[in-house]
Image: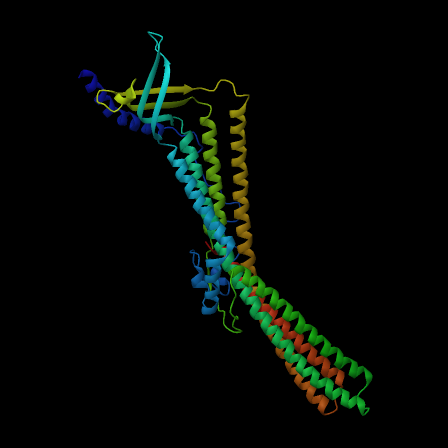
Length: 461
């Protein structure tokens, strides 16, 4: 009876001992404290938000649904986010990192298995062969984390999850920007193709009239060849626009993963991007968050490497029924339990632990450099986009005036030609300049819109 009472008392105290061991394991942490490095860029962005066209003051990133306002373009982005394979891989990486974190968290707790052991060995007293049967729960090699080794490995896994989640957001931001750029390019391709077709139609009519004038001796061979050259030039522009449109359509279909509907020739409006003056707003970018998570992971790896220099305490235990006869295994009075502890201290490892610690420290220095590089790249992306907003708008306005002037010159030259005050070559040259100015204006408008997309991506999170 006393034995049974002591056994029951011991079984009650075992969970308390386990809880005490877990509490003690949370007391030590050999990892260096995470400190965010100072910004390796100027504290202020190059231009204030109020001084930049198409922006609004603000420190919060703009969601893509607020940035993209055209319904057709919203549908394309939704298709890309639903079907794009790169984003699917990024999402799966997050799921894998989350599962790995659960595995790491499980290492902090003992693993309990049910076991049936049958053994035959000599009796220590009689030296006769004796059977032993045991059935119950077993705990094997549970490490009491006094030095924080498992805790730091857990922190590293948590930082890895944060990194992959930031990578997923970065992939999503990249896909949204790519879809918007591809749609803008596809719209411009359609406009350029239509512009080239209209020019070909007009030039073919001019060629027909020039050939008639040449047949009656009212036009020279040079004028006829110039008219034919302009027609061929227009047809070349049509072929180029068709090819570029097909390439951009293929890009858009690759991003969305499905066939796309025609992009509207007009619309595709984009909202103003909020821009803050303080460079610390860049810390919310997914790639910067990912770099900082890698830095945190490197610090945790240092803690795990330092803990390897200290002894490891491993607990084992089992509790259940034990008997020398299998038929008596399930009868009362045969309960038994045991608990043991192993202490393993490194004596000689040929410098393995020291090399691992040195490697972890170097890894942290690499992570610091990568974090600073991410900040610098983010600053440059934002500065470039801010610099481009005003200059591209000025270029579009100047190109618009040039296009309008070319149209006026062409109209006036046509009037002079009809009155005999200008040659056919002057008229054809004026028409060619109009087409060139129209094409340049469309390209400038595309570049301005693409630069606004670049600002959205630079400030996005």
